Length: 180
Image (cartoon, rainbow, N blue to C red; front, side, top):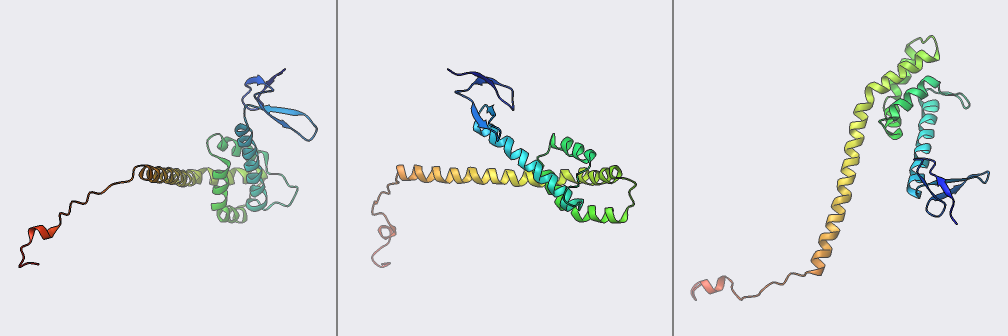
């Protein structure tokens, strides 16, 4: 007999027979509507971790154990309400030299001022990166559709082979004996 369970992501109510079950290290079960929803959540968690690791190690050049300023994390989360973590990370990568330059030239009074300045650089450049990312994604989708179209066209041609009529009508019937 199935028990009622709640999806950890969307809070939908279902039962143990239909929902996807994941058991954590401690043996506690968590239920999700389906595997795709769970995988998407795990990918997003991984992308967030990689972004914050990149920001700490590469952009801010922190040592292991130093934390990213909480104000910067909040602004990254605010950006994530629209942009994907991969777009935010790409923006940091493209502006890495700019960030390092201003960290060296400008004298910041505290971490909050530095993080605000860096996030202003990121926020002012993220739309350009997003446009490029969106264009690349749209091109990939179009290429996938073209591959499907070519495959379906080839299948249709294989199913309906074309038959050519041979009516022995060529140019010789219009020529005289002298022209041959």
